[in-house]
Length: 243
Length: 243
DNA sequence: CGGACCATTGACCATAGTCAACCGCCGTGG
DNA sequence: CCACGGCGGTTGACTATGGTCAATGGTCCG
Image (cartoon, rainbow over all chains, first blue to last red; front, side):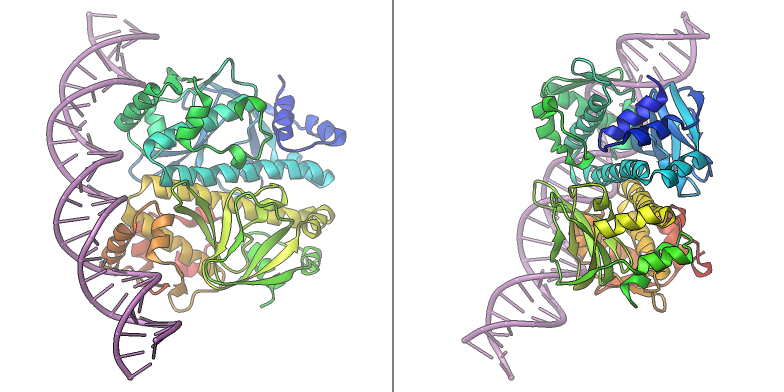
């Protein structure tokens, strides 16, 4: 699948694009960049002049705290634009890295802004994308602040699977989630041993299996219940299968 | 100060507006609504057809978790648009309430979208506002997930004072922050007694005083150090006094 | 075969959550 | 005017969740 189609598919998860919108999006120029595991794409403070669209693999946003530890903020799959905010925010307030081998497309800001000026309706779709992004952050605040580790983890698994499913990346109840338990700990405000124990505990519920970077959903309803997961914050059309 | 001027002042904290932009923003229609302490403006699931601009007082976004407890997500002062996302996200994924007596202006979505279509550059300023909003959420994830309570609280005080200062709401090192300790606990992933102890501990550092909803900065540098506060994520011009 | 990395497990311990009592303030109503 | 109740904040005692440290084991790769 071409990156233009990835991007259009992603925007159409929530917005309606006209033929003219789509035609102009297809004209966006972009150059490919391939990344290895843990490579940084951008660092806090950088001032990029182009936006990344994920084409393959998984990339992550993270903060670095003075102790040197990371706080992961979000994970991104093909079609996502994890640094869309650089269109209007000059300087990066987080870093962006490849979780595993990844492929991204770099699109010049100028080309995107020209598109917005020519077709505000296309701009609104991109805007909506960044607003959903913000809604996901809000949910992450609540997840890490108001739920116990078991719930947090279940909620996180629900969100990742749901988004992978919507992006056609889930196969037979499994999707890739190439994270180590250390990274899960740095995402969910926890520690490696606690995450390990929480995964084992979740495993015993027979709701979900997570091993070797593969997430397998065994009982969606149960997982949703454990994680208090309500997908309305993702602002996507709800697929029948995941209701 | 009229609400149009509040809004323009806020946008000009980070964006450059042309005279034409300003002229059109001034033409936005709006009707006033006065709220009492703890009144809800919007609830999760609502589908409003207008946006709120805060004119006076303080309003808060919050989630409600199944136990019934609240997780506060952000606090908003005059000039803020705490539900700007409703322009493009149909349904509210959080609730919005007045922290104390507050006055808001309700502006129809249609009027705002028409403005964007006529002047994309004005739209970009609003967009940037929502992107800064998202950056603040990112920081909140890190604050509540990776810092201990003392640091969290100091960081939160820094952010609130900084934003109040930029909005000309700080007088002689003090600003209003009309929150109870219970609300602070529901913001900072903590409990009332822990917050009480943390405030007392902070008080002893002589960096800050918080009592009766008044925040008083006694040693900005020290508070910034305790809270590991770096205002770049707010994406505003840094005032000399707070450097 | 050795080393790196990842996951699991146990022991110990500290932070902070819960529960509860108490205090001061304020507004209300008798 | 005073008594009361509610709310907000402080404090203490107890406890438990989960963090730190450390040892072990498995797997993969050089």
